[in-house]
Length: 383
Figure 1: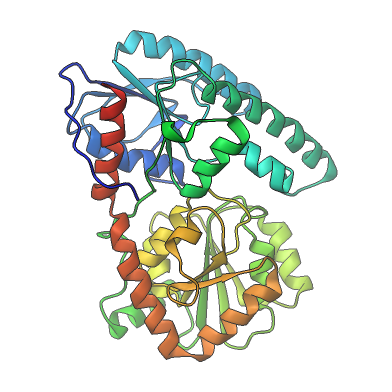
Figure 2: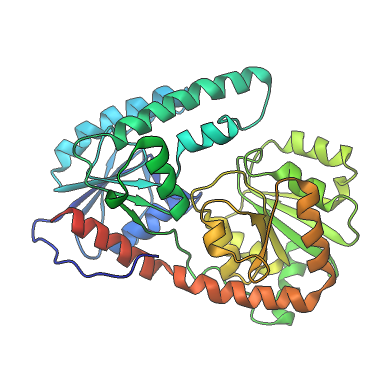
C-alpha cells in the first residue's frame, strides 16, 4: 500500500468519473461507489454512467445509455457517448475504470484483459460456440484497453494490486512511474464477525444452516473463471461439510456437476442476496479458487468477517493472505483445495487463529484510508 501523501489541491480541481455502473453491488461497481462517496466530500464530482446509485454522496449523475448486447458493441457505444457527456460536464480531471472511456487523465485498473487472455485464453466456459465468441470478444476488449492506456492525455494509472501493476507494464507498456497501487477496500461496519457464539448460532438458524455443519462459503458470479467446479470437487464426500454458493451463474450446469461428483446434497445455491454479510458471518471458511482477479472484494470482505481464506496466489489475494497465517494459498484444482479444507474442518484452534489474523489484516484496507490514498493520486494528476 502506498504511503499517504498530502498534495495541495488546486482550486479548479473537479472530477468527471466514467464507468458503466456505480453502485454498491458487484465488484468494481461497489469499489467505485465507496471511493466516490468519499471523494465527493472534497471536490465536485460528476458521474458519467449508465447506472448510478449514490444517494448518500453529493455527486451529479449524467446518464449514458449502454446497450447490453452485444457487449463488445455496447462498450464502444458507451465510450463514444461518454466522451460527449464528458465535454458537457466541464470537469478539469477525468478518471475512468479500464476502457470505459476512449481516454482519460487517470485510469483505474480493476482488470487486465490482455493478462487474462494470455494466461487463460480469455475463456469463461460454456459451449464451443460460446467459447469462440469469448475469444473474439477478448480481442476487442484488449484492443480497447491498449488504446486507453496508450492515450497521450493519460497522466496516472491506479492499479488495485501490485500484480495488476506489473501486468499493465508487461502487456500495455505503461511506464512504472505512471502507476500508483491503491488497493480495493472493505467496510468494517458492514462486514464483521458475529458478536459471539450465541449470535452466530442464531444467524445460522435464521439462514437455515445445520447447527453442526462445517460451512464453506463461495461468493461471486462468473463461476467458471472463479472456480466453482473446483470448490464443488473439494467438498465432495467430506462429512458434515456444506458449500454455500452466494451469487448467480450457470446453476443448472453446476447442479449437474455436483450430482456427478456425488455432492448434490452438500451444495446450497443461495442466489443473489442484498445481505451477503450475513453469509460471511455465518460461515467457517471462504473458498475462492478464482483463476484471475485484479483484487477481489470477496477476499477482503471475508477477512473483515473473520474467515480464513483458501484461495490461489493471484493478484491481490497474494498481498492479503500469508499462507498459513490468514488462510492457505493452494495450487489449482479441487484436490489442492480439499487438503486445507479438511485441516480447517478438523482443527478449530487453527481456524480461530487464522480468523483472528485475517480480521486484523483487513483493517489496513478500510475504505476511508483507501479513498484517502486514491484522492492523493487524483490530486497529484491535477497538478
